[in-house]
Structure formats: C-alpha cells, structure tokens
Amino acid sequence: MKLSDKKISGSVILALALPFLLIVPNIALCITEEMSFWSGAVNILLPLSVYALLMSLWRRTGVTTLLMLPFMIYAGFQIVLLYLYGGSLIAVDMFLNVVTTNPTEVGELLGNLAFAICVVVVLYVPALVTAVVLIFKKKRLTSLFARRYRRVATVATLLSCTLLDITYLIVPHYNMSRELFPVNVIGNMCRAVKRSIDVADYPNTSAEFSYNAVNTRPTDIPEVYLLVIGETSRGENWQLLGYDRPTNPHLSMLDSLVVFDKAVTQSNTTHKSVPMIISSLTAENFDSIGSHKSIFTAFKEAGYHTYLFSNQTRNRSYTEYFCNEADRQVYIKDSLGRYAMDHSLLPLLDEALADSLHRKKFIVMHTYGSHFNYRDRYPKEFAGFTPDNYPDANTGNRDKLINSFDNTILYIDNFLAEAAQRLDRSGIPSAMIYTSDHGEDIFDDSRERFLHASPTPTFHQLYVPMLVWMSGEYNRQFGDSAYVNLYENRSQTISPTETVFPTMLTLAGINTPRLDASKSLASNRFTTSPLLYITDLNEAVPVGSSGIKEQDRKLFNEKQIKL
Ligand SMILES: [Zn+2]
Image (tube, rainbow, N blue to C red; front, side, top):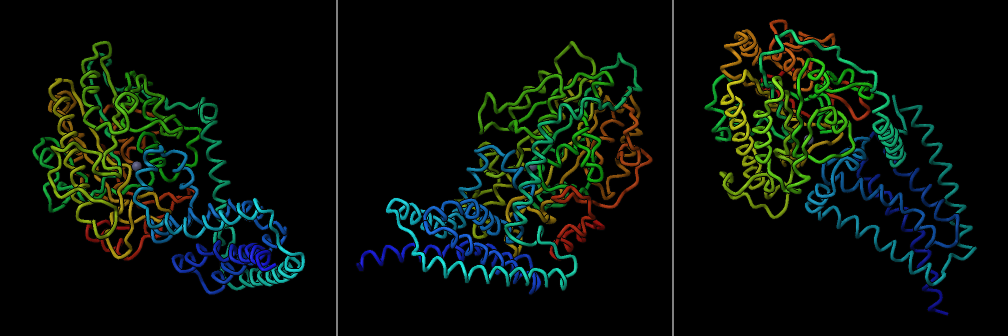
C-alpha cells in the first residue's frame, strides 16, 4: 500500500513541479528585459497557471509531460540564449540562423556552452525520464487530486487573464505577442517559417528583376574588380583602424589603399548583411529582397564575366540565391572540407585572372575570416599572438580568445595583401573592396557578451573594417578622380551595407537607375546619411535606437562616430 502511494506521489510531484520548471526562463526574462512590475507579473503568473491547467487536464501525467516537450525546448533554447547574450528573447533571426548555420558551426558553438546546457539538462531531463517511467508503469493522478488541481489552476488562469487585461490598460504599448514568453517565441517562429517559405519562392518572385545596367567604358579594355567579403571581423582589432597591436603588417605596406575608419554595418547577422553588401538593398528597402537580384546580375548586364569563390557553405539563404547568379561558382569546402582555410581561395583568383576567354571580370571572394572557433581559421605560422589555446570560451580566457582572434586578422591581412599583389602583377586595371558582414562580442565588458547575431547589437558587433584598393594601372587608364574621391571620403561615417554596391559600380564605370551616386564613396557627390540598423522584424531604425547601451555609445563616441 505504501509502495503504491509513493508511485502515485511521483505523478503528483511531476504535475506540480513541471509548471515551475517551465517558468524559469520567464523569471530570468523579467530581470534581463527590465520588464515593468505589471508585465513581469503577467509574464510569470499567466504561463504558470496555464501550464498547471494543462498538467491537470489528463490524469496520465507521463503523457501530459511528453506533450509539453515543445515548451521545454523553447525554455531550454531561451535559457541557453540568456546565458550567451545576457538578455534577449529568441528572435526571428535566431530560428533562421539555426536553419542557415551548418551543423559544424552549431557543434562548435554548443561545445562552448556547457554550463547553459547543463542547466537545461538538470531542469528538464529528470522530468522527461520520470514521465517515461510513469507511462511505462501506467501510473496516473487520482481523480480527486486531478479535479482539485484543475479547479485551482482554472481559478489561477482566470485571475491571470484579469491581470493581463489590467496590464494592457496600465502599461503603454504593452503587447503580449512581444512581451509574454513563450507567446512571443511562437509568434517569431511563425514569422521565421513565413520567411523561409519566401526564400524558397525567390526564383519566382525575382524572375522579372533587372538592374538595366550599362557599361560606360569601351568593351575591349580588360578590367578586374574584386570584392572580398569578410566574416565576423571586428574593426577595433585592426591596426589600420587604430588598434595598438600590429595586426596589419602587410596591408600597412600597400600603396593606393584607402581605409574607412568610421564604418558601421546595418545588421549583425550574416544572412542580412551579406545580401545588402552584394546588392542595391539597404536597411531601408531590405523587405523587398524577394524581388531583388545581386551585384553579379548588374555586372553581367554590363558585359562582365562573374565569379564566386566561397569558403562558406551553401545554406539555402538569399546569400546562396544571390551567389547563384555568378557565371562560375566554387565553394571550396565542397572539396577541402570544413576546415578549409581562406588562403585556399587564392589559387582560384589566379585561375580567374589567367582566364583569357573574358576581358572584363568581376570576382567575389566570400571568406570565413574570423568566424568562431577562431583557432580553426588560421594555420600555425600565423599564430603571431600567443597563447591562443583557450580551453573554453569564457571571460577568464578572454586574453587567449583575443590573441586567437587577432591571429585571424593577421591571416586576412596577409590574404588581402596577396590578392592585391596578384591583381597588380596581372597588369590589368583593377580594384578591390573589402569589408566585413559584422563584428563580434568577445566578453568585452561587464555584460560578458559573446558572439554576434543577438537581437540587440553592440558596438563590437557593428563597427567593421572597410577598405578600397586600386592598382596603379587602374589610375593610369581611368584617371585618379575615383581615388581622390575615395581618399576625401575616408573619414565619413558610412555603412558598407549601403556603400559597397554603388562604390563598386562607380569604380567599374557601370551605370544603372539603381545606382545612387550620393552613396558611392568613389563619387564626388557622396553625402553621409544617418546610421541605420535593421531589426529582427526587418524595420530600419537609427543605430542609436537599436538597443545599444551606454558602453556602446562611449565607444562610438571614441571613434567620433555620430549616432
Ligand atoms: Zn557573418
């Protein structure tokens, strides 16, 4: 009899405990998201009472618990995220990042989140194991307990709904679809599904698009333009941008290099930033991406042969669709595997330069740059800053992480100098633009933030390098007015996501109705425009209103960047 009582109490304990386990992220979000008293109270009491009501609906607690698995997954994901960013809700972009990130990246990331994952395991795995045992032993709640539990949970739910009504009345702009976990996360997941469907439909929605681009230069003059897209490169770690470590020994020696020291990207995610860099899209018209094409199409219309050499993986995103427009595409990870180094792209540049079939060439090299795990991004001979062997990514290992990150900059510095030398040696008029899609947090301050793509950005995620280099032959053939304009604009506040496309087209003498000369750094009509940031909901907001904090404002100020 006693034994049987104990088994029944297992069902009762699980039915009572699970709602409290599930609201752990709700409690944390009340603190990290600085919720008002009323919205915080709703964010805890309403989910708690609804979870309790759900647990009381069926007497077979084991089955009910397994049905609650999606809520455990949301809660677990949210806890990991709070650990990672010290705040922020699961955003639309996060679902898309999971879809567009390869399993290796996820593995590398999760390997460094051991603590957060342990918390999730300790919270939810015992509940799941107990549920399976209860199902196996066919245990259920007594009908008396289930009835009483249901009655209490119903009353609590009704009271919480009243609290929700009061919150709508009292708190200005309150919206449960944004502030109530997990309602907000489920809403974001639906938005992510819709965006994924839109991406899949891209070939149809973009079919009619044209840049109507024309080449203003003679067709028989050979020209080469190279766009190198960096990955996760923090401007603050570039010697050329004032960093006190010699991370740019090769580029520092290069002639005709123009360095833009106030470049701020409009997105902290690869899947938004890269499409903007390689098209006429900006934060202001990003929502029209489904009917847009990339810079490859503009150059093709102007008579160019186009190449994509990528050290990233195909990921079914707009970036991949845009890159599909290139005449020739090589993804080096296909043949060299996941640890392919960026320098393996250089022989492809040689091959394209030697291609005698085409006079005019436009090349995009998409590097893997400084993407975490940093120490996998450069060979040993580029480990100029040591020790760079961090066992885990945490505040205690910041010095080693920074050493390793700086080594990735040494490596890309050499890569870019090598690329410029190859263009120069070819004797063909040529120019190269380099920028990075976004930067990264590396436990820089008391917020202890790490990585990028968080719903709210930081200075470290937005401040990026941007360089333009031109060959001597280019200046001889086309005059040096472009160089003069670039040089004069070098201290302007700019967004590469807005300026790369018009600048590249100006350098190549290509015209299109979609070329806004006031955004071209190579034009004497360039004018600086307010810095914008594209939110998770694809709205363009001033960087100053993007959720950056006082620490970030101070750093923007130090760089003399006006927000
Ligand atoms: Zn990226």
